[in-house]
Length: 571
Image (tube, rainbow, N blue to C red; front, side, top):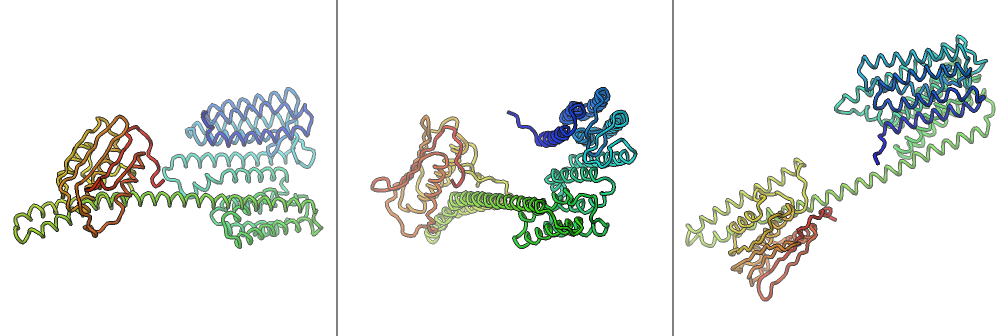
């Protein structure tokens, strides 16, 4: 099942909420007045949702739907229940704003201007038809609610604010879509836009409900809303600034007791959001002072607006409940952030451990092999240099070649660490330039360059060999030969068998050495057998190592040839 994209989900939720509000408000008037506007509002919401894919088509059909709905309202003599824009229901306002955003965002400039002009004309025509010819019920409007001049001017101002906001949002989305690198502000806006839209909607509804005389009281809540939007950047400073705006601006503007609401819903919502951010992001003492400042500011404004009268206990209980919800939300997200941080830290530690193990294995298998050969050849050259200097020359040439190969391998490893482009996985390491896609040639070259007893190869390789299996075979044989050179100085022969069956590849390396030196050449870290066992087990195979009868040492591994996913490094 194909998941619904995120923009579709958000727009559907916003339109659904607006339709629900209209349905609730319609229940406050008669069915004759409340129901006729709803089918047209629903159709306009459908046009806005479909405009996510075809914005210009959605805007054209939406304009026609608004005009057709107005004619239906005129024919039924209904009275729409409106908020903000007189004679336009809330869901139509939201859907129209969404259409403007989409056409400005996705259409060409000429098409965006045409569609926006058409939507504006349709809205103004609907206001005339519904308001002048039918009359309109304004929700929370003081007075008769007739289509008088003050209501018309206020509706036009409200509609202009909605139109300007939609155009600004569309232009921002258009610019963000053309940017290749997102800035910090862009990231913040993408995360915070649901909060910004909610606070802006509350502010516009409050402005419509309070009337012109109550607009001054919304300056402080508006500033608090802006602080709440940018709160993730500086929670403490912005919380203090919001508290000061909530208290100082109404006092400076002379807002006291009167007909305005005793509390601003936008200010409360902004304070709740900032409290949640403070609890989530700040240390406990700082979160306490930020919360105390916001609570104190809202209580002080309540006292000023109530004229010093005793506040309603039920209202104070509601405010306390909102405070508990804000603090609880902040603590919840604080715990989620802490859990996420611990999970990420554990994952990083596990990845680092896996990288260290893979790198240690490569250093041991590749570099130690060359260094051991250099030491053994140098000791041999020292023994014969005094009596037969000409015999020491080939040994010195092999020392030079081995040193060059060791230096190349080390540079490759260090380069991979600096670049961070090499992914160390079991059996897939190109630590040296020796490894090719021809396993048989790599094994024969390894045996020919081996400094020690004569190496006899018996190879029965399959035609198709998984890449990771081939690399692991080469490393297992290489490490086994390195151990022979370090631990079996008395060996005269080493036999290497690599043979395949139907389901697995068998590797066996055994020597005929009979002496075990107490201090091998270069010392022994004890990680050779561990690394070989890890390689075999990571591929789902088996590994064994130990004495082979009375003399010698034998290393055996069985690697599956069937295609199975590698187990996680370090698991």
